[in-house]
Length: 557
Image (cartoon, rainbow, N blue to C red; front, side, top):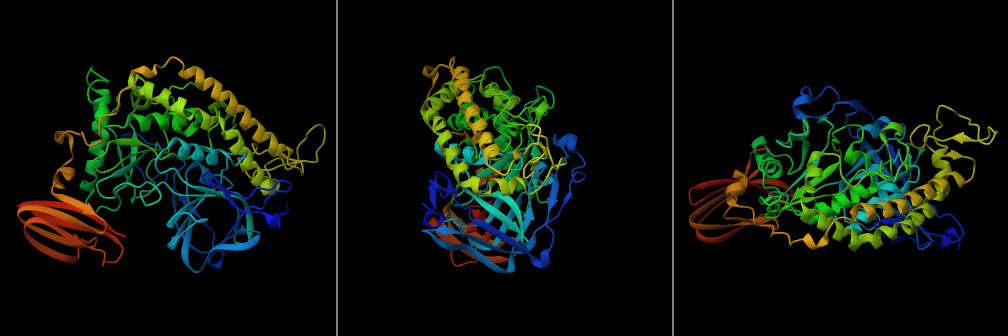
């Protein structure tokens, strides 16, 4: 088989072109900024002046600014050169992204298109992440984690595609195009107005656009309250509009950490335990340094997401930020595969509390039994990644030299220590692929050992103690937020809404800048207001229903 005969195929969530006797070329992503402008970011460490009150950390946070760009994405399809995307005219843009990874030499980016674009046939979106995998010498950890997220069934798990990345005519290395964690069709599909998405992350806010708060609980151990970003809904004109999100999160925390009758106090009515079991199973199996924040005694998490749909229960996910999985310890950071014996029990008090519930532990073990074969299948998936990466691995690691431009390997100084990943941690490149293959072998060995250890950790859990989850709409009316109460009598439909009135209803549609777009007055009965003729975007609906005023956000797509 020759490179000209390669056929791109989808393996799980990633695009690979596999060859039996030669290395496949990765697709090429080429970005040129206007006038060759640098993509820069500034430290945001002074933005949050009250970090102690927010229970967050200012260190290594950045504010990123978009730069106009052109972009092409090319590769082979059915043996022919194919252009998947080509945008010109500098109407599209790119910026940096990330916190600690932005401080590295190999930087991650975020791409924003003027119009929705598809990556290799995926659903079209405007925004995409471009991950550097700076800490990962195999380029497989995020890919494997996302693949497992899809197999386990964690909502909103990103699709991902490996590429060779060129910026302003310079090769930057092997990168990974991924979906971003976002409420949107084809990503996390929940109601954009009445649902929500939050992120538990110890980093402080880096701009005034970010909406964050600290949870009321847990109080023990001291300082364990969670710094929380509200990722959706977005752009509410009144900060009080976010209160229903804070109330939902704090209601769960309160149920878990007050009183003496946990877990039989109704907390299961608020949270989907099966989703949390899947999420913790995967995060703890992968031994994610960021999930447990091993640099902090209380294990403050980073990049932990939870969400809730309209009339549903709180669920865990999506999964994100997995390049520091695989046995990374604080005292040898960021070296991978130092241990496969990290305990199943999480470090933070919020996650630990679930393990006080035998029903949760039963669900956790049942999910392991169901998905053990998926975990056992991952070494073959890792090999498929290695097969397509090998053609670019040497070039990637020779891209940037570490502080020691030569190294002594078996009494020779013929090698270079590439820093196409973390300085001093990238494999020694000898002009062949053995160093990269050794890293892949370490990952596969660690993975097999982790399966055996995880099985031992789960052995005491009793699956017979499982009970069905209560239905998702069982939240008592007393615990609903004011915004949720105010939406009674309203029903959202695609590009519109319906109202049910006993006597009279008035609906006023307003743009986000306050202009009245449409007004309707109805008598008793069921009535609909269609907005599909309006420009795409977000609007406010002011409704007076039988003398009660209500407010809601509504999206037109």
